[in-house]
Image (cartoon, rainbow, N blue to C red; front, top):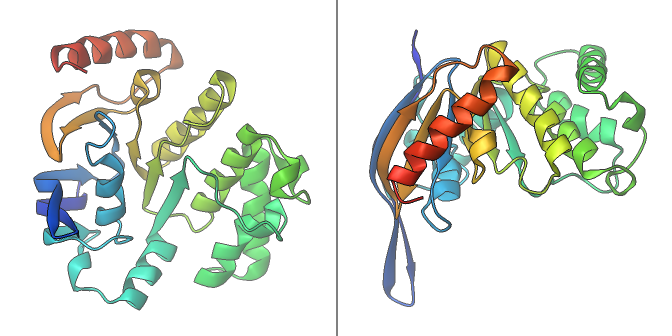
Length: 253
């Protein structure tokens, strides 16, 4: 199995009022294609910064990030935008959508922009995704007319519309209730089983238990890593969650 992500000596430093803040400190890790990895750590530990930096949404200070064989530090803005559009999908805690577009139009827009398929095929695939996630009835509604759980599932449809190689998820269940959170995680697990790599930031032990590997970060440094393996059945979740909780307790979580 080949690597989808390979990170070496990654640093990110912010300078404000002549003060340097080293948010990421010489991080090294990699992901295999089809892997599901969670990033955990205290607030302010650099988790979201890591996600934004390795996806090219934010500039790195130093180091290398190789995504699907390309060193993103050597790509220009247009090349990075094209890479994100065609090979990456993004889900955030804050559910960003264009307010003047319907749910369906928000989902198909990246598909039209990428031009990887005919528009009729993009429409067909969008409807297929919406049916699979149980939100087809929201197609003509606007983001203010649907529930938080429906909106986050729509964001997942949009993230999947171009069949990305990698899904980046930043607290994708943070604003959801337990039921909606479970529904979104079920779909992330399904997408992963179908071959999409997933890198997710989360504070939730239950949510992270669905991933096969958990990386723990404190003050921009990797402090530990726990391998849980692929989850084969939903009834494994409680055991995996206990194992993760015990490990986090050892790390003074």
